[in-house]
Length: 89
Image (cartoon, rainbow, N blue to C red; front, side):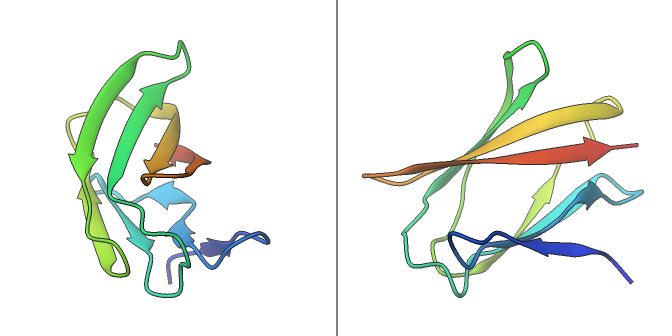
């Protein structure tokens, strides 16, 4: 069973770890904000991946091309940003 984390300030649910195939799930079905884009940054702050996502939906993100390590995911809407931690191992 995949672990999920629910953030206290919103209803965003995501897998803490990227699975063995390089995918992680971000569930925006209960989110109040209309996030439309996700950007992934490495620990040096370099943007390594950007993708348009579907607001208010369950989005499966493929990060199989990334090396193992720690990443920061930034969700963007027209008015807000949210930052989340990711681990790929």
